[in-house]
Amino acid sequence: MKRLGLVALALGLGVGCYPGDPTSISEFDTVLTVRNPDFAFSEALSFYMPDTIVQINEDDDDAIEIGRDNDEEILARVRSNLLAQGWTELTREDIQNGGQIPDLAIGNLVMATENTQWWVSYPPGCWDPWWCWGWYWPPIYGSTTYRAGSYFVVAASALDITDPGNTDELEVAWSGAMNGVLAQNTGSNFDRLLDGIDQMFEQSPYLSGPTPEPAN
Amino acid sequence: MKKIAIVAAAALVLGATGEARAQEWFWGGSYSMSLPLANTKDFNEGFSFRGVTIEGRKIINENFSTGLSFGWHVMNDVRTGTIELDNAAAFGTWYTYTNSFPLFVNAHYYAGKPGGIRPFLGANVGTAIYEQRAEVGQVAFTEDKWRFAVAPEAGFVIPLGWYVRGFVSARYHYMTGSPTQQYLSFNVGIASN
Image 1: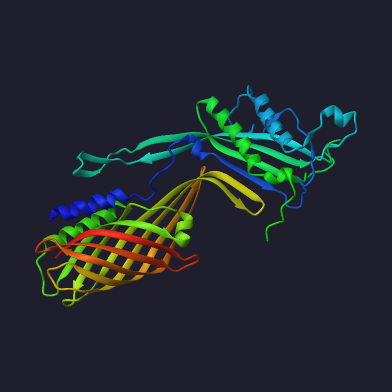
Image 2: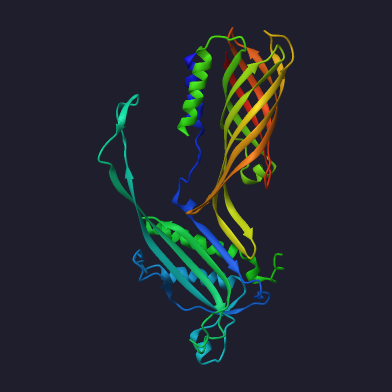
């Protein structure tokens, strides 16, 4: 009859609250896009994109320095996606000497942090799995550290572009953000970022077409 | 959660080794599988093989019993895709988990004669702790609610020995709240007095 108890015990232990947790670092990646419902994307737009990726948390305590070797390729991927929408790129010369004003200015921003969480554990004191008398003292201390990064592409009104500083608030038409956990393998981080940039545009089909009716 | 299993095991062992009494109790445990329906299915689709139910039934007469039932049913799902929000869209790998802990009082009617295979119908009424959790990226959302719950049931009792019965049953779980939650649980178990 004790077998009944053992069966129930095995069943209970086998249930588990949260089975099937992530097994790959890429499963932590998320891509979020937000659009301004009042902005008309119905016509092909012109844009200007500075050739710099700005790290917005550079001075923070938890900031980590990021490599710049892949900046050109990252910006090229953003550019190719914008051009694929049917948009036209204006250069600095077009603006300064040609007197043209782009519909939108594209900002590329990055944030990278290192997060450390300390923990304390009181492991059970046991001779074997069936004979335990309490907990070990002193407890064991440790820390868990992970690195996380976010990449932002922001499309904002460029009316102020010839007179910077004249307007405090820029009207953002669209923004995309990719968030993920940074791996030691920088090649993996780079590939996942490029996939994330493509995903930002894939889930924003309105960028190249009529503005959908705002949701009620 | 280990406490639940220990309580379950204790209940089974005590029930299994106890002497038969005038007002006979049968104690049992079952392996429970779940099929989410309606809103529950929207949150986590697919058949779940994770669950356990512990029961005690007091035999009133040849055809009726009343009793208690406690279950722990886990459903989970993984989906990679985009969720559309108002003026926004979010892409990621979404892990969703449901932990349902129904606690019922119940009554059962048994057809047929003692000693044979006996079909039964049952009514379970009570409450359930219902937890839903969604994880995407480095963010998790959790909601716990107590819900009023009912679960009509049908099944068979199969004699396996003098003091041991096997049983199979299906329960339709309905939980009130906004939104309501519904799923079927399929139970295969043994009981002893």
